[in-house]
Length: 224
Image 1 (cartoon, rainbow, N blue to C red):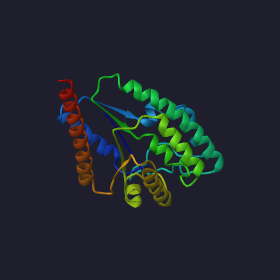
Image 2: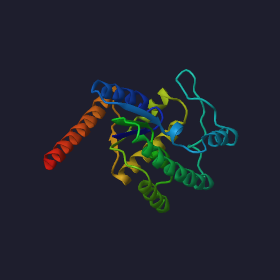
Image 3: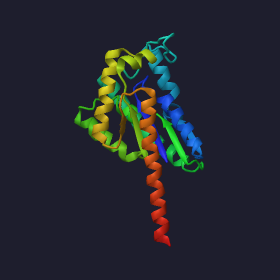
Image 4: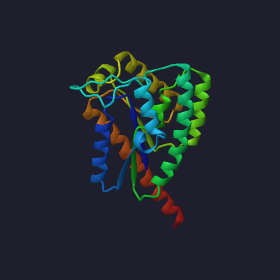
């Protein structure tokens, strides 16, 4: 099984991934975790160098006691949009190979911290050319068994992880919801408290397990 977690910075992805890993362990499932930025993104050092040297983005991850001013996906322009289309295509090709390798490691469950959706949400979704591009990319990459996008209140998200302006986070939230509507295969976790969000995710995960159990039972019955 492949499950991905996406959403704006500060939405609670790391917390919910930890919760799901703990549940899978309790159920006796062998799991592995991948991070999109570390395990999939190509030319990572050059992309980091570009945003830091050219766009003047601060290094590090923001925390309530140590905010940072990030300048990367919140910097827009037609030239950057073209560059993102190109780079995201490279990431999609690499994602295909990473997912193929993940199938050989013997894990019951692969959890990805972010997915191609987090890149596609950075694009101008109102543009018909971009929407056509997104459909092409989605044909290139595997579709997770569940693709969670964690919704969140932008003000609360920024309080947990102060990196981007609140107005950009509002824009970011709208993009994720629009992308979910466009693709139709994304499970949006409502902007709930951590405990309620955990329950929502666990219910969806247990439903997936039950669906797979029934499919195996039906296959065994047909074989008999």
